[in-house]
Length: 528
Image 1 (cartoon, helix red, strand yellow):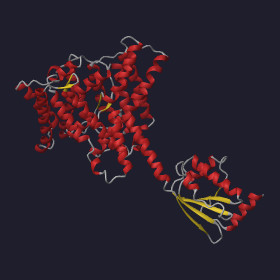
Image 2 (cartoon, helix red, strand yellow):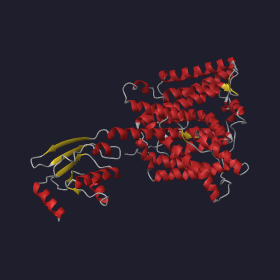
Image 3 (cartoon, one colour):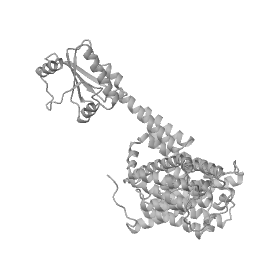
Image 4 (cartoon, one colour):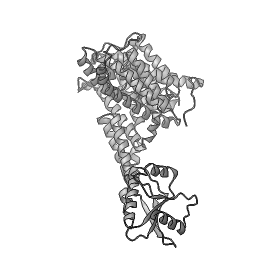
């Protein structure tokens, strides 16, 4: 079941909520985009252009209204190596290699949407999802701690106290605003109020402008992005160089976007379209490559800001992107006045809202392996990156599932009035359960005719077919016959496809009743 079409304009209340939340998101996007641009080793304006295109195009075309995309740290940490190597290959061409890579990233992501690979996000277990949100919350928190430092050291005591006071005031406003009015845009109110206080009382504290200047930039002012095909050599060596980066960036972008989509689905109790989101992300990254943006993916922090500020429709993302462009073109001097403390307070609020506090409540209630997976994914997200964390979590969950199912094989044994031995199998037969399955049979003590009943079981893979074949060979060496019963159609089809290695009899009587005469006839025909 896919999401129903959602329109940009729904009601006056939704327009107001989407507009206010969009402006708030745009304010929060500025320092994030600038910071990630510095991480990737590109100009701040490249990060801002990337945030603009990602936010606008995914808001209009994406499969999850209310979700915000932009330049992200998860992709920036990969881009920095790409840009660095690109600079080494061609003098100063690193950013051009990045733009060309984004074209390939876009094509891969669009192809993933066309092939409907977005549905596989449903295979991500709940424990991995909890680890994902916890890890990202910690990463966001740690990234904000850098705002309390200068040149790698903590701010001077006076400046640190001012920063902490303003952040605390920002958080207080964020918690109180919804209690005063349910639909109050708390984040926007906090940012404007802190900016006003700093301006009126001339408080000496870090602002967006000083933050950019500390990192080697000059400001957020820029012009309209213009079309330019990446200036790199169009050769096989270029493709060989960029393709691994393109594949990694595409995978990271899709994983983070689809995981964020699932989270927003839960928060809004609606259903997004994963495949459509894949194509929108791909198109946005492709356009970034042509118009000089650094690309990106869904941003969990900004998405949470948007949702908690009342932004649920596509309009919120459109307003955020357009506001960001207006900041770049016309109002940069005002945006540069916004205190970093106000934005840090908003991001701390996001951390509180993002972290799955329920993880602590289920420690003594959930299976121990689920707790291990949550801790593993959380840790790997913080230490490495999202893609590695989710991949490791899914693999570990799959191994745990296989192990537990391998131990669930049970067999009921009895001999009927005709002297035929029956084995009723309970549980799936697959690579993990074949050894336990084989141990259940009493080959030497069994009579001449043996039935294995799979009414409550399934033959799942080649390992299962092989173990049944080995079992048949052992019975045949003892001069006994083995018959399979109650196989589902897909299991029968699987065995027939493997008939060169599997020579056991499959009983397909629609009434699942076989008389002694049938067995005698089978035996006589096999003897001849």
